[in-house]
Amino acid sequence: MHLGIWLLTAMLGASAEVNDSVLHSADYGELLDTGGSDVQLWWCDAPRKISRGRPAPSAKGQAVRLQAAGGEFEAAQVVVRPRRALSGLTAAVEGLRGPAGVIAASNIQVLRVRYVPVRVPTDAVGVADEWPDPLPPLDRPIDVPVDVNQPLWVLVHVPESAAGGDYEGRIRLSAGGWSASVPIRLHVWDFALPKQPHTQSAFGLGVNNVWRYQGLTDEAQRRTVWAKYMQCFADHRISPFDPTPFDHYEIKPVPNATPPKVDINWTRFDSAMQEAIDRWHITSFNLRIPGMGWGSYEARREGEIAGFKAGTPQHEAMFASAARQIEEHLRQKGWLDKAYIYWFDEPEPRDYDFVRKGMDRLKKYAPALCRMLTEEPTEPLFGAVDLWCPVSPAYDHQIAESRRK
Image (cartoon, one colour):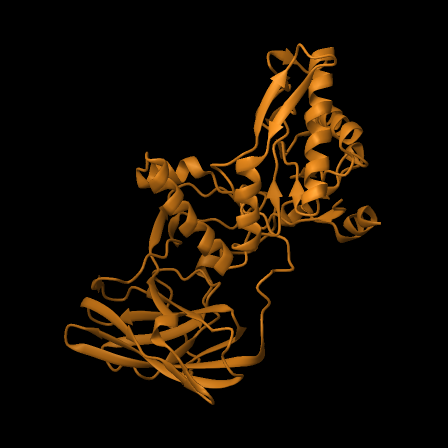
């Protein structure tokens, strides 16, 4: 059973105290001397949110610098800020030469940083502006207006077999009447990351949003696209909530049995989950329990099985049957340490009794299943949650440590 804390770092509460938006920070980056008089060319580390209008840095550097282990993906941003409008900007990469060979150009991608207009900020660090977010491939020439930053995301995949040491190469940028050569220096540490990640993660992705965005209606197409998503997750050592969206276990309620029960067909689920573990190296997965119910800070609903609502003898018997079978099956497969039950999202204090009731029911019939909740540790729910997932500003290390004991 999990006993611990995950951090939900993708959100900041409105009460967080900040002095300015990270989008407008201008205290980082290095100016490269290869841009010439027409273009200010600079670079910075990958996590930065670069605004369209911030000035080029005054600090100077000689090359883009990266450090990585074998098997790792590492990125930096090369920023083109022209003094005159550029037409048809393209990028070409060459391999990185090192002590025992070359990291091929096929291991290096140049992606275009695109911007999303945010009109209504939703947290304390947000501002109404254009925010960098999508990273499509730079697979066609683009135009860059004068005095506007256009970051390029340079992503290097270091092969597992790469020898430790220093590697060098270049990215060649060109546009109408302008060209530049950007030096890349990569230090490879003398070890490789293991294929299996050892840090658990859980990334929320609703597959229906993927199907709608990409206009996918055919299951074969959806499976092909989902495999690409899973490869991307695996490359970046992330596990999605549900790695087997096509192949959940099949539940057949038998309310007229004595006592009422459910039958579970594990065939498709087992095959798909084994692939997710062996091929995609997932570290966790969310599992749905029939009759558990659901809820969030907006609404909630009691569990129901075959028309029998929570609180009825039939529901209680079928819920117990399902929970016990699921726990035992995961134990036999060796997957208990990866599974968690996430059925209620960010409860308000008014929801705590409902949440505790559901968590206690699960604990009664499947005590080894991990009960996860997206909430900071709070006393009314102590003993009802095995894995807390607070937003970062709500994390209290002292309380978290006390709950781990």
